[in-house]
Amino acid sequence: MNIDMLLIELSKETPIPLYEQIYNQIRQDIIHGKLQVGMKLPSKRKLGEFLNVSQTTIEQAYGQLSAEGFILSRPRKGFFVQAIDELAYVQPKKEASKPVPIKKETIDIDFSPGHIDTTNFPFTQWRKFAKETIDESSNHLLLLGDPHGDIELRQEIAQYLYHSRGVDCTPEQIIIGSGTEQLMPLVIRILGEDASFAIEDPGYPLTHHVFSHNNRQAIPIPVDNEGMDVDALQQVDASIAYVTPSHQFPTGTVLSAARRIALLNWASMEEHRFIIEDDYDSEFRYTGRPIPALYGMDNGENVIYISTFSKSLMPSLRIAYMVLPKVLLRRYQDAFIHYVSTVPRLDQHILARFMRDGQFSRHLNRMRTIYKRKLQTLIDTLTPYAPVVTYYGEETGMHITITVQTNDNEECLAEKALSAGIRIYGLNTYRTKKETGTPSFLIGFGGLTDEEIITGIQKLMAAWGISKEPDS
Ligand SMILES: Cc1ncc(COP(=O)(O)O)c(C=O)c1O
Image (cartoon, rainbow, N blue to C red; front, top):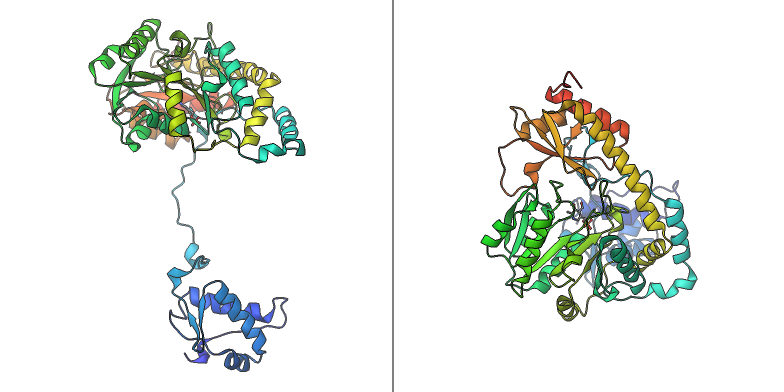
């Protein structure tokens, strides 16, 4: 190559060493393709004379470029530009990294069912247990722990489940994992390739995806105001039923007592049948007594119980757990003997201390009151729009479902809401097939303030052209 091709400008004014300035400029020329693959660079002596710097300076620059793989030194032949796609890491050109404009919707109020209240988290207590845990005295926690989760946390969970959910299990039956979504594929694996899964329709979208991504059949079973239709389940060839009995996601209904018995009977009829009970938000029940888990009703024979701290504490913690019937526990141990726990031990121990100290129950009690107040605000704001707008599923959790009597369809209503800066979640999004019946929406209230709930609903009704009933 002609040495003039190297337009290297050196400055003695900057603190950047000369060799680094040379290295930087050659590197940029290679990245931007000005120096093409295979080109031979001038010898150290020639370039040194040309730039009026010492050969050692050029040697340092070439040394750095070859150490990073931009050029290759061939003995007695010289230095050659390397193929760009062989480079391990290339800084993108500044101009090339201009952000692609993304169409941004302005959402003022998001009624997401997944948002929790973040303003009342007990940071002081959590920090106390974090400080106690992240300490030299816990240096053993830097090593790998029990693959099923550390026993300290599993003991706390077992106690909590016994007292609060009527689930009588040993800590050994509990497996800790980083979220329901991480535990489900493990369950699928231990249930074997012949298992076919019945899912709630409408249902939790994760279940649709996780079964199909794992090449398992997911058979939709309709949900009505008593939960999953067990008669319909009996008609299909499914061996596993995934249900959310305490608070059906998304409709919010509670699986009726008759259906509970029918479902447990269905499971006990054949050896390979199991129920996956996803008890994701039952901590927050506002009316009547807590509904015990299905698991407690069948002595843990045919029910795989799954729950999470995503609603009760925070979704970002990524800690969930499952309780396996003894027969599946053996299969689990065989299948995953070489796997380590997916949850950091420090986090497990912070949570275990938080629970042992009684802070978890205190937090739940406090949050139940806060969520109950928000729910009441939501109901009070919605009531004057009845009977055009009605709601259900208000006994548990952080969302309710509303139905709207109008000529518009669900999509059209959701779009009208969006253009008013309000995001709501159409029930069709959670169905395997869209329905054209009365439009229904999930209204999550956990992450909103009372003021946002009131303004959000008022704006929504205005966007839909629905006014309050005159006598309200
Ligand atoms: C039905 C259901 N199950 C489980 C979860 C929690 O999942 P994870 O533990 O992966 O956060 C949610 C959260 O929204 C849910 O709606």
